[in-house]
Image 1 (cartoon, rainbow, N blue to C red):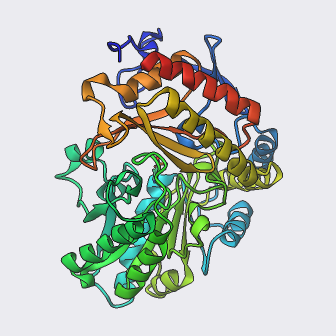
Image 2: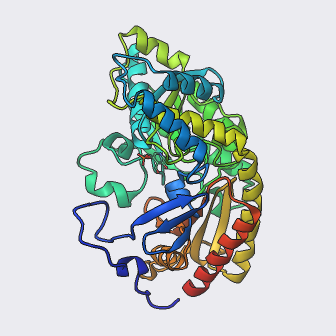
Image 3: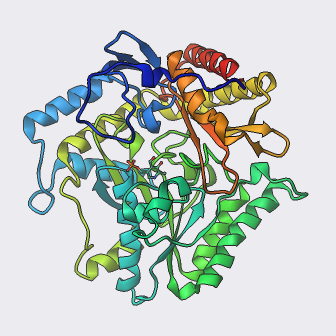
Length: 451
Ligand code: PLP
């Protein structure tokens, strides 16, 4: 690998700004976006190879969604949930609940993924109190994982790079290892490994005291922290069994894996999962409006309502404009065949990435489902030895691809003791075969520059 190239992002000249996000870096100003492409004011075009942070599932600039939002804006852009119901929220709740497994038909709208996770944690706790189990409050999580940036969501997030500073302020929850079975070097089959990882939940429950645990939260297909981690098939049924055995709620965080991203509406649909609570965001608003949802089973919600109501809520919950966008996004998802296209283009993209591993042996562990596809960047693909930290492979790949007009999602995770650099490709679900080829071409050029 060569020395760190100067970042094209940092070089971009922008006026000083009062805006503050994560760092001092300034990005170019966006001009417009359409389909899988985004243009900046300085005239550059980018392939949105990660749909932003896996958000723009139906693609940018969809005219039908924009028109539906305009129609709603003419009627009412805000109606507070304690004063009024609104039709888009009611209809979206009805349609979303039809897409959920089992009796998950109670929908609580929020404005983003962290809010959805906070809501799930609080619902699990209030359910425990409402059902006469006040000692249950812990939510077991996985390491590594990402569930959001607010304090509650951070407490169940397994990524030391994000949590360490705030450790004194967060009530960090017990964690078990995420099922990174793909890189285990033992004599077990994948199925045996799946059971072994799931059994770690039972061990943790017993260590914590089953009477103290309210829920277990997991991403059915891993996102930001594990770059599209797919557990072995055997994992899911065993996790459900353990949760049932100890009377613990199972929360599936589908904020990233949901909304057709993996080729089925929910990531858990690949295994016919039956969680008790599902959190969603990102793709359900597809970037047209800040929208999220927590969908819970009747069995969980009814005792809470009997207790006098869920002691939780947000001002923008069930916002009519956001829900109108969500309704139109759902329609477009069907019309555009997003699930089918994600499955087909995902197969193609994964095969292309596997091809790249021959050219670039530092890429290992290509994985994912549909159009949520990830890989690690390693020093030794046999045993997944991490690249030296000072190579900054994650940041360099991001920069090199950006310079060439491709957005990739690339991070280094601190949470599994390895500190692997990884990247995700997750373009809008409307991507064509030719565009997959175009994207892989630019990625190949970027990896060539990185090698
Ligand atoms: N949960 C998962 C699985 C996520 O991937 C994310 C964001 O990346 C969140 C929760 C938090 O969502 P938001 O950034 O919308 O608050």
